[in-house]
Length: 357
Image 1: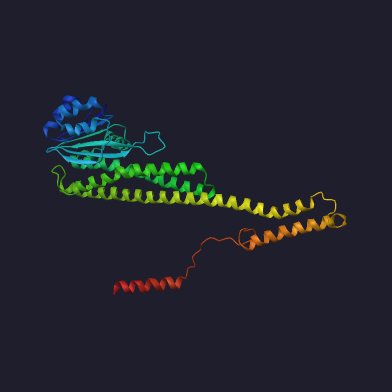
Image 2: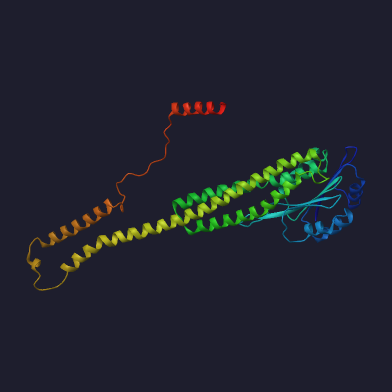
């Protein structure tokens, strides 16, 4: 158990590293604001959560056991419990790893618990340790919002990194659709599914926190939670767009791979078709019959070579006019839109007139 505590009393004095007895006294005093953060929470912390704070066994079980829970919010009378998800940056897996954080919001305290060390929580702790304790001056609902906001903010870098990774995969596919690209696409899709699986219920949970149905959240704090809900909804929209993009990348990969295979087969077929008539001519004049009429002609060898060259040239020309061979043809250039400044300006003017009318 990694226990971090901050207590801003009614006189504005900030206390740190409280003992269990001091935590219990501060939480039951109803004054000031107490923040207790439990890192690497386990079954050993059940006594602190149940006995010291008196939390409901259901919320305590959700915090201390190893099962994965969906994001949720539950009102236990004097305590509001939320289960949220963030990114586990300590994982060394090639897939995106998520982790849970339980948050208890009471009358004058906030208790956060998580199994892994979270950079979001560490950033808030550093802020308080540097002497800036404004987080503790606005009440437990605003402190809970700050913790949730930091957790959600740390999801965006992962999504941006996934988008950059999708760009890299696309570049590789266009150059050479090798099997490593397929494996990267499938890992990307699995990571997107993991994120979508946790963000979807998390967006619903944030929506409930904005509906003024919990006594622990004041109307003033509801506006902050509304903004947080919009941010989660935005992230969910980006993840959904990224999921569609991954499907498109997979389709592009399969199409590029099929095109590459077709190009290979066509090249082999062209080579085979060109040499088939040449092999026929060589086979005919390579037969060892005694009375072949052309054997006694002085220029027969050169005539046969010329005939073979002519057949090869005619075959290549036939492939060229049917666009099977693209050597010497014009390539598709870059798309450069033609900008008609006057036309664009006139369109803008007409559009503005229609809007005014």
